Amino acid sequence: MKNLTLLILGSVLFFSCNSTKKEAPKNNEEELVMYEFSEMALLMEEMYKANEDLKNKIVNKEAIGDFSDKFLDIHSAVLTNPKDRDASFEIFSKAFLENQKAIYSASPDDVKDQFNLMVNSCVACHKTTCTGPIPRIKKLLIK
Image: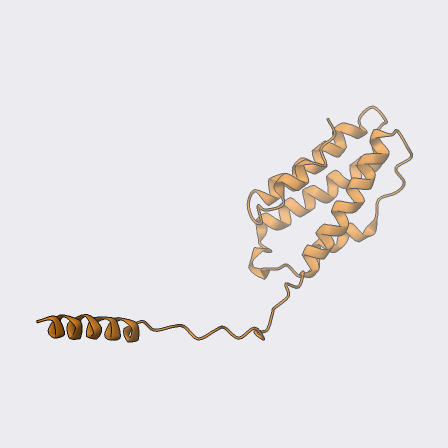
């Protein structure tokens, strides 16, 4: 009986140890794919930085300079998802450009409000698609 118990116990241990399959170690040489910004994403980064500088000039009551034609690329830059360039995008991008241009012709008393209007037009567009940057865009608002 003692031998039978040892034989059964040994068999159970043997089969349980052999039945677990170990995964092969993953190849550490897997190719990493780097995210590449679309033309629009790069343009949005440029516009953010330009408007961050503009905000600082407005807050510090410095001369704000002239409207940059680079903003006009919003109509031609390739989007991350080209399907996002729809009628809604066109309406929002035109409103953004009008609000951006209006900053440079606003009176010193109205420039802050006009700047915030421009920022809010960015937020409104991003609420329809590509919502991720909204918290960052809101940081541009002048309080």
